[in-house]
Length: 245
Ligand code: FPP
Image 1 (cartoon, rainbow, N blue to C red):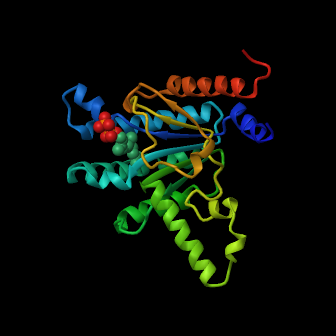
Image 2: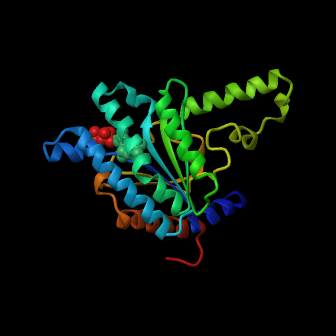
């Protein structure tokens, strides 16, 4: 099948891994700790994931930090998640900058407080010249909302006469998404054993290999990333039907 060839190539060499970092609450509950301590340990796991992504030669790592649906959580927990973004950027920005990591934050910016917007802008500006590893944090992000925002901007450009409706293609549409310029993820990992995409990268994950790991996010490490990448490689070999098992 001709259509399979390009997917097969993508499967052989993962460049972009996206992760739904799930299981912080359960990890904390197992220890009779408050959920927020699970999220705090989740930041440590994020640090390990960024290091491992660099060591394993990935070009892009995208993580789901806060979803548009997470606003439904208790206020304390929402505040804790915002505090953790602040903490992560405050503590790690210098190191990320020095290590060649480019940081981007995707998601809805409207409605975020000015201090969070400052933090986001500082992280993006300080690392804009980097290209060794592209770290994208989805924050206040929902895939359906992202697609709706893209459609709105596209419609505005059409009304303004900048584009013609008949010119609209999938490639053009992708250029209106928050992820414009990023390749689609080769692998989407979800930790904690849940089997859902939960509104993460709905457009971009169209051809991604989905890997579900039983590990809870605070326990995620390089070995877990390697496990996901080796599962991906096996699927690639089966997909092409050449050279492997
Ligand atoms: C899902 O676990 C995880 C989240 C909603 C937040 C993920 C956040 C982090 C890993 C902290 C780092 C974040 C940033 C932005 C630096 P859950 O709470 O749904 O776990 P549960 O399903 O076990 O309850």
